[in-house]
Image: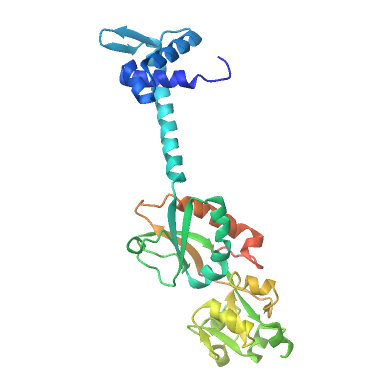
Length: 307
């Protein structure tokens, strides 16, 4: 056989075998019965075999035709399914993403344009929220949350485990005593997380003595607010590396001492587990993992794996 496949002839063969009629095959292909007959004749001349036998009730597969019909029928059905998938994909759809405020503002929002450029048919709606909503009720397709990955009844896919870094403004550090050890941080004002626990846990993780000063200072319920306070020179903040990447890159913040603490918690992409998934979710997850693994996208410091 030549290099060019007689696809029209093969399709005419499959549809005729499926319907047992040239007329019905012509209707399925949107052509005339004469065109079907011509395609079958050319195919049979090329192959040198007869594919159909004529009866009083129409046409039936010959022995040679019956031998290859099942495989060709499956092949054309698979092609039809693939075309339907592509047609659905080309239809515009909305992908609603809910992300923790800091992650949404500092990391995801600036990069969503890259995803939209790759998938212009997907309209992304980004909501910032710290609470894990009812995904079905609220119409959320993907929720990106920071925690232990324990979300009963939902599917959680590990993304990354950022580390905490002690950061401060260069102006604050210029007028302060030299910080050469972790304990030297106590000589400067400390900015706290909402639970006033990060500084204490950091010292404990490094087997350093706990000091009452570790829980003093103004507290903020979000990394974005901690970063703003640190940029303003109010003190040293322990923040996730990816959230402070921009400020570290442009010099508004600097790492006080190179002693990061990998967190036990990680970021997870949470989706419904009932199979009613948005067709755009796999494309977004593929893009998200690639973006997280790209050094210039991930920020100044290496993202630690959660284990």
